Length: 306
Image (tube, rainbow, N blue to C red):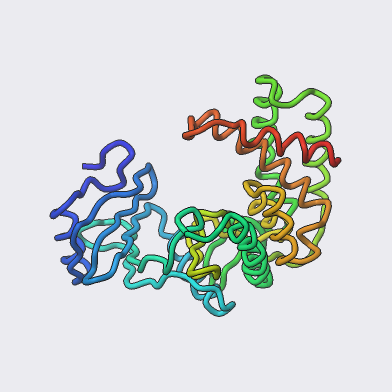
């Protein structure tokens, strides 16, 4: 029986027995750390190591991630290792992937100084640039075709048109709730139109979520990049904007130093504005822990630059 917000209802020993039956791996001390409508994550011990067991209703997600991890490794980017994967394991019944934990600690858990933490963002910029150097066919969400990652849409405009309804809904919500003025909303609508009209050539591989909780450190070096579930093909300036959204002004300067000139392009700031609007709408409507205050000031600062 699948419970609300649970992909599978297995817990404790029954879950561990299912992993033994399906994969021949003896995991212990399992605990569910993420549960949702489409995906679920367990943390467990395998021998002396910690592993994460991920279950997703959508096979395409894991097909894309597996190839994404290989590409990251080829680019010299440290990532966790995939121990096992099955599309339809008998006991669990849904696509299941078992992975090692990332090496090191998150930025928040590291014991380096605040100044050193800021400086880490130069390495984040270098890392994201390596990801974006990979070029792909197509644009938008990815699928695997003949062993290659391919974007769903034929042009960036076509992909961005597919987001139009959500963008306008988010913007109207922000106007109605006085997060932005009518004058600012007109600016933002012009940004949407500008983004739809750009032609930047062949798409880059985008991580789309390279924030502080998605990279690990050993000392001052990045030792692991995780969460490839949002990979897509598109404009590298969009990926830079996604990464910079939650960075402080100081961290942004370090990031731009590591990434290079593209991160300082004016369009990055415009992408950030569209991302702020989406995040304000999502956080408010979904009642994400915390509030939107941390988004409002940088949104206003970004709008003043237009």
